[in-house]
Length: 289
Image 1: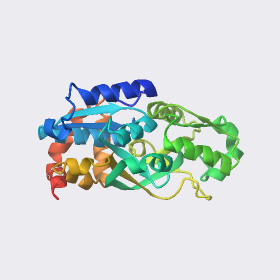
Image 2: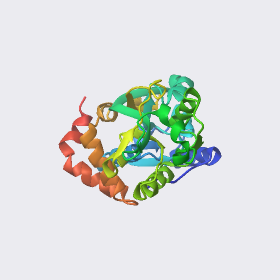
Image 3: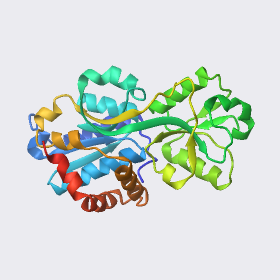
Image 4: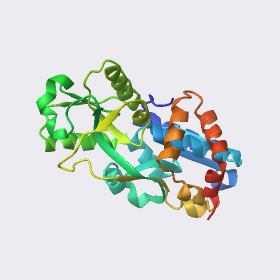
């Protein structure tokens, strides 16, 4: 599973430029060469959806390049045209700062999922049920909330949660893979742990977990997960734009895809292709205007 790669910004730019140039002559278009570059972050739903898009487009003769990076360079790359698409934009809260910065340089294509949730998550056996109870049980949590990569929107939101609730907790930066490893270790030992989390995610299928209530509403309500492209991309690629505009999953569909991908580390394309073949009518329908 490509979930443990963190790329420094300088290398990301170099990779983007290298992957997008490919010896392309000035004036050549990706449309003419049937090339598509999709950026992704190391979140399971993003990995799953991106690999599904990759194998479906490859089945139709496209050359698809995936570029894995942190959120900030991904937005910058799509805005500059170094990557064509990104399928993991959380709105209106999580990625608000990136939309404010790059919104005029990108276009929204469609909504992949419309019930995204950010939360602090604990195992069901933990006796507290709300964020405002965390301080009273600080020692059981070792005074820590286990987070993911530092540039992720949920990390900024969680820092605000710590301020709003005056939590005497440290937010520990990690990665999605690191957070999940910490969660599994604590869960197996029935130890208390609080992690930054979101829905949809396969961890809810693997463990008995609960979202801590957020009385102050800092983490917001339901969010959408949408697709963005470099501004003007849909007009330049009218044969592909409907696919990304119509790419939409419900909980059961996305859940089964994520589990299939997560159960096939290193073979994400194979797992995605198998899922596509089992859901071909659904996916092929996304190409219709």
